[in-house]
Image (cartoon, rainbow, N blue to C red; front, side, top):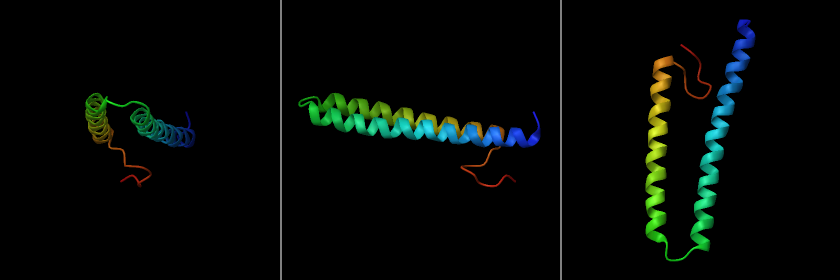
Length: 81
């Protein structure tokens, strides 16, 4: 693959990865709000789901940071050094 094509491909892949994670986050918040509105008496279960979701989010953030360090990639469009 030519270097210019590789650069375009990498940019598109980064944008797609950010889009997926943003969509998951937005969908999760919307779903939790809908569940909270439509179910009464399940607050303990919802709190547990929220705690698990928060922990998974922290794990994914740590994995992302680890992979960036490994591959020495900048964050969201920052210039490479």
